[in-house]
Image 1 (cartoon, rainbow over the protein chains, first blue to last red):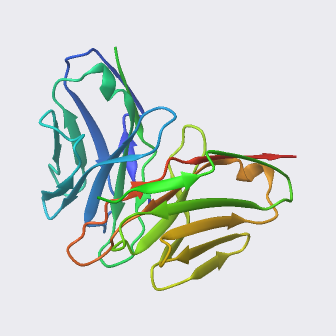
Image 2 (image 1 turned 180 degrees about the vertical axis):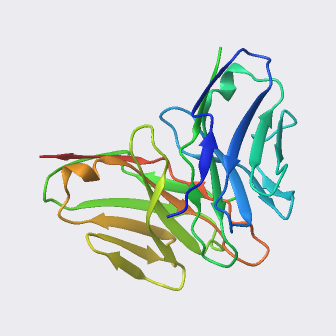
Length: 114
Length: 115
């Protein structure tokens, strides 16, 4: 069964540094998402991406965040100047065309800001 | 925007017992309700979902019911096994049309099944 893959699995970064999280969605999927989960809390929506542009973003997704699909397979989340409160698990998800399509999640990247 | 409330936050059962987790949602436009199981340190995995035009769906030991009028939906696990122990999340979204399907999750239920 095809899977969403994410790299790296764990990223440790100094506060103020830039970080890029990478995702390879399932190949025929058209909608891509980033979610985050602070330890012990629920999964929170960050951003959705379709047709090479952001379709929706949450209040968490401020000017420090950006997403990009640099080629036909990768989908990245960049945090420009990391803060301590950015420490969380970041999940990428993708889904296919059509109504009621389930979202498939990657294994996540654990981001630790020091 | 959508708000999803989930109860209970923790649930402890004996192996073989049933477990029920309940969620309510606020946006009557939501039409798709998936349930995810998350084991420690792992990805959320879809275990069952239900559409707004269906009242109940069953898959072996797992069933989900939806009451659109009351805006609540529930997960039922029968004959629980220790490997069912995990965190379970409900979610809601408006799927299709101009929506891009962002999921709003409940707070999660830690299910522990004791052998």
